[in-house]
Image (cartoon, rainbow, N blue to C red):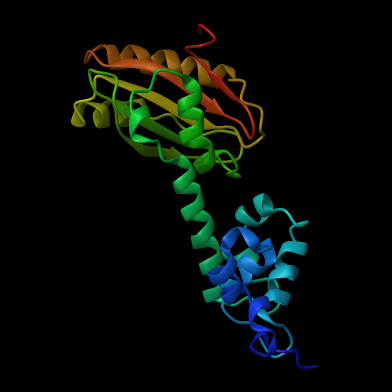
Length: 227
């Protein structure tokens, strides 16, 4: 059965025209997704396809954002191009959410680190380890992923982290990694590796300012908890 093309809808109801006249806030999630999808197929309009995509994720954008291209393509009508467009849009949203306003480039609190990193790694199904680099004034000068692991652990490669910190001429670093379980409390391995990293960095007069463990909605700061 052929669907009723969006082109036959009243102009004010077409997602793209509606956005232009009323602004993006006036559109439903399905309508915004339909603009990304650009077109449907012989059986479904882009809006129908977007509604099915949302329904497959219980209507939750957070679940949709966690799907990879192969998972997105399991829905009928979602080819590689459409799946890639949706994934790219969510990745841009994560990067935007992780940006720090210029007046916050001095990192003094762990919640600033959590705001930066949770959009990037808080919902990942595997662990990743990142390093934030600071200069002598405590200003944030960059970040870098240094390792990735499985669902339960990742390797904190002390030699690599120290080498990169020295190359960056960093005076301090903040170590960040995520727990896919959602529970940010550090395990024994986390504590042991943190202590070893702190000692190794001290040889080069580089401070380990903090180690922040990111959960899904909470974080744990070694510094704030006086570990």
